[in-house]
Each structure stands twice: as C-alpha cells, then as structure tokens.
Length: 167
Image (cartoon, rainbow, N blue to C red; front, side):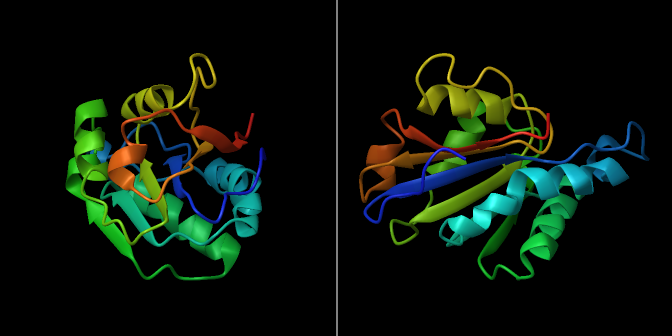
C-alpha cells in the first residue's frame, strides 16, 4: 500500500483479473483457478482502507466477472454501480481510454477490471516511467489525481496510491 486517496481527487484502481485456467471452450469463458482466490485476497484486502468505488467497469469475460465476485466476497459487500462492458475484453489502450473518457464527473473513485496488455499500458500512460513495468494476474494499481475532473485527470500523470501484487 502506498497512501490513501485525497478528498478532492479522482481515483482509478486498475485491477487485472485473477489467474485463469489455461483452456476452456473459448478464451472468453476461461474461469479462475483456485489459486486466484488466495491471490486476490492478498492484493485486495487493503482496499477496505480506501473509498468504495462509485463505479466499477468490468470486462464481461468470465474470469473478470469472477474476479469482481471474489473481491465482493472478501469485502462482504455488493457494489451497486457495476457496468459489464464487452468492449473491455482484451481492450487495447485506445479502447480503455475511450471507456474512461465516458466516466461521469460525479464519480470520484472508479475501478476497472480487465486484461493485459491494455491495463499495463494504461498504468504506464498515467504514471512516471518505470513506476510499473509488469501487471501480473490479481495485481491492483491505484492512481490518484489532485483534480475534480476526469477529463483533466486523463490528460496528465497521476500518483501511485495503491500497488499490490500476489508475487
């Protein structure tokens, strides 16, 4: 954990799905491995010290849905503002930025649950060079901006406020 988020800020938590089984009927339907639940316990437990998300945007793939369900179970809560987006399935950087550009200004803290390499590229865009060089499964990176505007935040570097991996 790095630091808590500020009261007058925009906060983005980038969550990579847990470790998934190698094979399934389709890649989209791959489920989490049992190990993923332990890994997500390790990486997400300290999120309870931060503001609950105002919005969660989650890839509609099976492994990302299961990642969200696991985090909800760990925190014993149900998040009400969840948007499952097929466009996040294996999204590249431009697709992710398009999704983020549509976040209403009223939301202070947003979680995005998805896939690499797009999520790693997103971290690298918003943080200083080499702040994050890998985003392994179950990793969570929290980025905070000292602004009340998502459009302003998405144009500048942020501050790493949360970083946990299971490794």
